[in-house]
Amino acid sequence: DKSPDTFVPSASLPFLPRPQHLDGTLAGDRGFDPFNFASDPTTLLKYRNSELKHARLAMLAAVGWPMAELFHNQLAESWNLPMALNLHDRVPSVLNGGLGNVSPIFWIAALASAALVETFSGAVGEIQSANLGFDPLRLSQN
Image 1 (cartoon, rainbow, N blue to C red):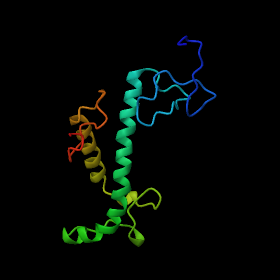
Image 2 (image 1 turned 45 degrees about the vertical axis):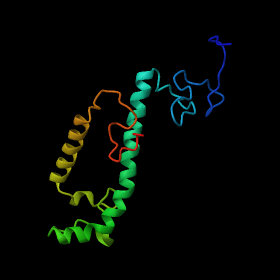
Image 3 (image 1 turned 90 degrees about the horizontal axis):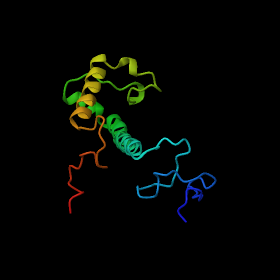
């Protein structure tokens, strides 16, 4: 029976109804949207693309952070640059108080680079495919 009065429970929260647009077709979809953020298909895809992009950035940071601590001294020495690591060879962060030592020019360059990548990716205000145009190893092609 497909009547609107039929209660279809969410797989993740069985005491709540399954959100209309979370029907199990997306990877990892368990019907978890207790605040109804994905109220329509366009919003759902916008949030999905945003989550994919931020998850990929987090994965890059998970690799980049320890690599920076391991190889910074050798790179700075070979390029005749000052050492930017804090005491005990730690990358400057909010937690160790080192961000005040990072040049404002770096922050401007980093934000400008991110804005350029975002602008030229065509993702500003658009819904794109899941790979967001990034497939350097051509894994999506058969």
